[in-house]
Image (cartoon, rainbow, N blue to C red; front, side):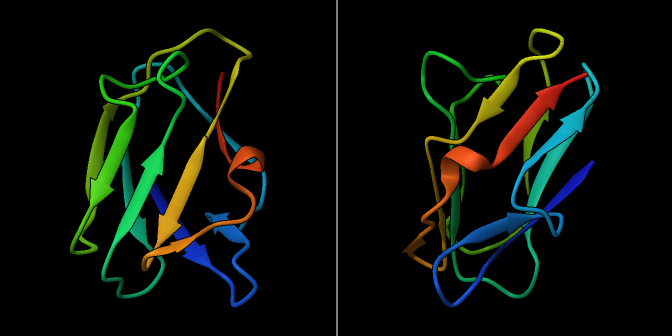
Length: 101
């Protein structure tokens, strides 16, 4: 599944056009990419609660980046601890993330 992430002028961010969590199936591969041409993005999960092998999914040049297979507990929301797009820190990372279905 591809996640499209974008930042609004007021620094609120979206994923796949939503400002909330998105459901993902166990074992599904997740790829993050910018909604438009980007110079940088970084998605960070809390180190103690990450559904991927790494808590940080980083693309310094904005290219699509695979986070790997989604692995977590059913019904659990895995929200971001921080999200940066084009070197701008998003104001709403805790409202964005993935829910294991």
